[in-house]
Length: 483
Image (cartoon, rainbow, N blue to C red):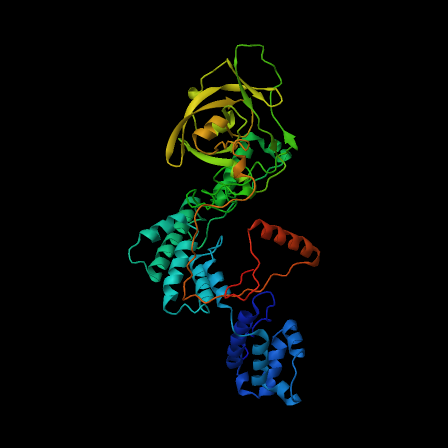
C-alpha cells in the first residue's frame, strides 16, 4: 500500500538489543501494511537491507553465508541480525532505566506514563508492573503538591494516579489561560507571551511621553499577556513557587538553600586568590574588648569539597551555613546575611567597646552584637553574634563549636609516664582455648606471591618475629592454612 510508512534507519546511539527489537517489530508491521509480506523472500531481504541504514549495512557485510542463496533468505537474515545484536536484554540495566526515569521539564503526564510503560515492557515485572508504574509516577512527578495528594489518597491505583495528575495538569493550564487572557472571544486563540518590548530613542522623542506610554500600554493590551522570564531558582518556567524543584536544594557554590548552582548569583562574581575584607582603621580605645577572627578563605574554589568543616543551623527565620573555626573567639554574621534571614535590626545592640580583629591585626568593623536562637539536632541554643559591617562568610567560633558538640578537643597521652605500654611485646595472663566448629570445612590458602626484591626483607622479618615468640615455624601438614 502506498500510504504505508517505512521505519527510520536503525539507530546506533542507543542499546543495541532494544533498538534492534524495536526496529524489527516496525519492519514487520511495514511488511504487512505495504503487502510486501506476500512477495518472495528475496524481495523482503533486499528491502530490509535497503531500510536498515548505513550502520546496519556495514553489519550485513560482516555476515558469512554457506551459499549465495542464503543472502536472499529473510528468515536466515533475521536470525543473523538477532545473533549479532543479541536479543537477550540486560534486565538489570532496563530496570535501572525504569527506576531512574523522572518527569522532564515540559513533559505532560500522558507522555511520562507512556515512557514508563515502554520502559517496563521488557523489565519482566509480571504482576507487579501496574503497581511499580504507579510508584514511579508518585516518586518521579515534578510537582510536589501533586505528590503530596497522591500520597494522601487511600488505595491508590495506577488509574487513580493518572487521573489525579491529569486533573492537576488541566487546572494548571486553565489557570494560566485565565491569568494571561486570550485574543477576543475565540476559544482557539491561546495566550501570547511577550518576550520583550523595545523602543528607540528617536521614536520616543517624536511621540512624546504620553504617546510612548500609550504605545506600550496598547501593545500589552493587544497581546493580552504579560512578560515572563525563567525562574530565578531553577531556570525553568515555574508557575508556582511551591512547585519549584529547587526550593529545598542546597547550592554548593554559596551554600544557601533555594536555588541551583547554575542559577547562583555568586558564581560569576570576581574573586581574588586569597581575600580578607577588613577596615584598616585602627581603634585608639585600649579599654575595648577584643575578639580574634582567623578565617582565611580560598575564593577560587567553587567546587564541592571541605563540607566536613561546615555546619547548617536552623534559625527562627531560616537556615544558615557556618564555617567551623577553632581559631575564632566569637560567632560572626555579616549584616547583609542578617537582613536576608529576616532578623529585625532592633535586635542589634551597639557595643562600642567590642573590637573584632583578624589574624593580620586589622580591625573588622561591626554594627553591634545580638543574641539569637538557633537549633541544632532538635536542641535550641542562644548564641552571641557579632554582626560584621562587611561581606564575609558566617563563622562559628571555638566556644560555640564546643557548646554544640561539633568539635571535641583530644588531649595527648603522656608517653613518659606510660612508656611500658608502648615499647616491646607482652603477654596477657592466662591461656585461651580456641574451639573450632566441627561442621566448618577446613580451608587451605595458597601462599601470597612476594616480589623478588622484598623476599630478603620478608625472611628477615619472619626470623625476627620467630625469635621474639610471636610466630612459630610449622613443618608438618595441617588442616588449616592461612595466608
